[in-house]
Length: 118
Image 1 (cartoon, rainbow, N blue to C red):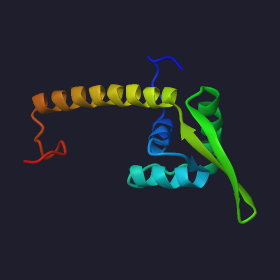
Image 2: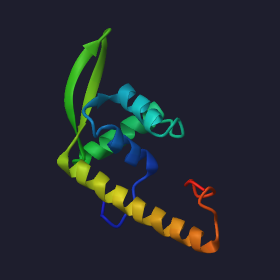
Image 3: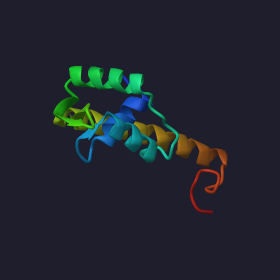
Image 4: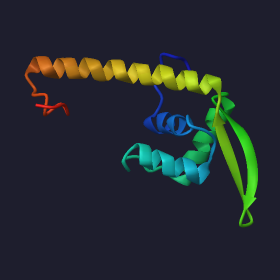
């Protein structure tokens, strides 16, 4: 994906969930829910489709597999390329948020309404 294209929020959340280390699918679902304060709920089909796509793009790699209670768990790890894409996207979103907040403050919105302190 080109650097000028934005990624979905779910993709952003998946990459963010893997920053601290490898996780298996259910672990990614739980971490995304935690990081988003429950606002993002990944479905299993959506997750595995995204993991396949992100792996194909070289942003994630399969770290290891293990069998737990007779079920195979695949752990995915963020690559350096994935970390760079995440950093670029985070900076892009921060710039957009800054512009929006600046415009709102010029419109006269109070700091409390913008999530700051009064």
